[in-house]
Length: 322
Image 1 (spheres, helix red, strand yellow):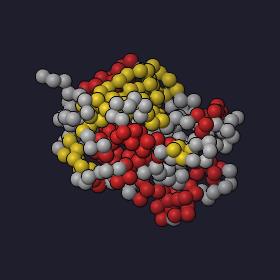
Image 2: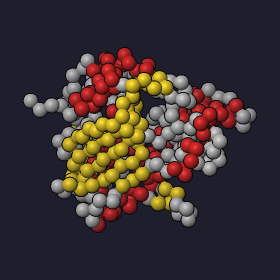
Image 3: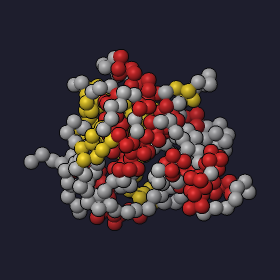
Image 4: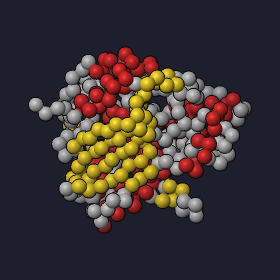
């Protein structure tokens, strides 16, 4: 019997639980159990790797990927579509403004309500500069231009299907950590930092390198997001999707996720679903979340766990430069 492809992910989850090295985030004091270096591969020509041992937030996958693809860096679009996976990061920045006396104290719920209701407030406080959408579609060049990396990669493959150079990076040292000039550092830790597109056997393949991966909460979401990106690019190029390859640097489990990980590992994978595009997509800008339908998804129930807002800017380590 052929081994279920989800077993690759479950193997990493088990190794993290049983063999992960104890580490502590310098900014928050949160403990993780970590391993370094791994890879999983999914054949997109058969089905779609939306994990089944717990229900993955598909609406969030769709809207976040559209947020990236459309080059946005303000959470208002997500908030307006009732997707709240990015709320914590601009709110954390807002609380720092409150501490400095530059903003009025608000609860998180009040902050998000104002993002939704007040366009001026959203423009000022909902922005996450130097985040994925900006760097994929409007990378800031030194001469004042913006560079559409992903758009260029797609057109390069259209002109030359044998191209080996179609790579998109979100890792811009100019805005990261103590490499950044004072007061310019990005406040979100870029985690899935680079991917490459390639055509093999006529199909569009995508390999992601993720330098830091929350194996329980984040990785199932990341797998679905980049597999969907490969499928969208395949649509634009009028080809079929081939393989999604996910390569990991540091992958880790948070200490407060241990029971949830054990619960997930006790479950048996179910058949993967499929996706179907309901509209022809002839360009990246033509994509809309409602153009994708998920078929045959029958997962186990969701397993809730707390998101830890860690990594990225650390005042003790990086304040001298950022």
